[in-house]
Amino acid sequence: MEARAAVDDVALGREAWSVLDANWTGSATVPAPGLYPHQWNWDSTFVAIGLSRWDTRRAGAELLSLLAGQWSTGMVPHIVFHPAAAEAYFPGPSVWRSQDHPASPNEVLTSGLTQPPLQGLALWWMWRHTTDREMAAALVRRLYPMLAAQHDYLTTARDLGGGGLAAIVHPWESGMDDSPVWDAPLEALPQVRYAYRSEGLADGHLDSHHDRYVSLALRYRDSGYDATYLREDHPFAVEDPMFNGIWLASCQALAELAPLAGADPQPYREAVERIRAALLERLWADGVFHTRDLRSGRLSPVCTVGCFGPMLDPGLPTERVADLVRLLESPRFMGAVGYPVPSCEIRAPQFDRSRYWRGPSWMNTNWLLRRAAAIHDQTGLAQVLGAGTLRLVRQAGFRECFDPFDGSGRGSRDFSWSAALTLDLLADTVDP
Image 1: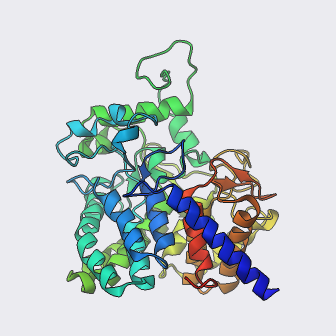
Image 2: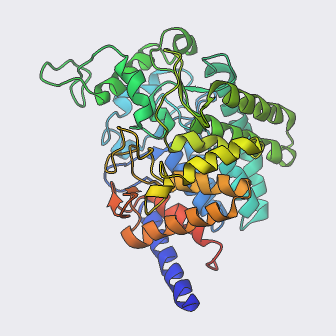
Image 3: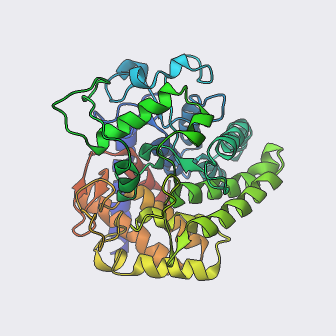
């Protein structure tokens, strides 16, 4: 039986490589063929994590390609556009107009938003698991100043609440685009009606969250992507526990990589302490972390997979870890489903097993929670998360997301981060 399982794992690994090779553009990996023809920040970074134990060169290429789109402010954009398919996705470069902003990179078209700063953790993961120590060391030295600039940007331009956390200014910046925690901040916005793929008003098009997504992007663009505008006038500003938990984890990673890069680790150690204290003070209530809407001052009552992001902190107090693990294993999340981890608590009125980020299970958040469980010596939970996630891809293939009850696939097929993170999960059992 064990020999058969090993053979099956090898076959699964080969299938994962086939997906990644098919989605490779020569410089980066697109999330999926057709629907997502560009390089997305979060997606590409998870691909780099998944490749880290197998191919240092290609893992590094993912990060280098993404950071070629970094702005001089330090902001790492959530999309780097491939010119050949520039307007094949909406909103494309003609909406963002990055080329008109003096801080954007020359000859690289990008969006004007960012996503969770996972790159520091990804670089540390690559260094820890590298197949080529010399190459990985060179990549650390090359990328470290870029990531330092990214963290400076978050500290100076995104602490909109003044409490030490970074705020997101658009749901797309969370990576969890349609999560129900954005409903209240979005519904507080003025009603708008935008024509699809157009900036013009359309009387026949009903107001929706999608319209407000476009409206928020246009407001920010029309401000000149101005940090003062975000602080004083932008209507959407939310402190998200997953975004900030990832930020803390990347600060920890940069502190550990600092000697290799010839840098001072102390600023990142201090950042870890600051973010931890702010998470506990500003987002913790009733045994869990919540999102905070800075415009209303209210915490979201809905618990989602993002609420567990601060578990990536190895210094999170033990009693808080116990509370989070108890909730994660309860019938509100894993205790009532067959596959980990539903993206929204099952008892919430907003739960929908078929709608993006309102119920389905995702490989990337499963991977983050497995990492968090391992950090806190929750060995049993880590094993359940790893095995359950592999069951999803064995059953349904490398899908974008999965039904948490029956494991059926949802969204795009041949999804890159699902394939890449499968490789990482297999790395302990399959010889490269």
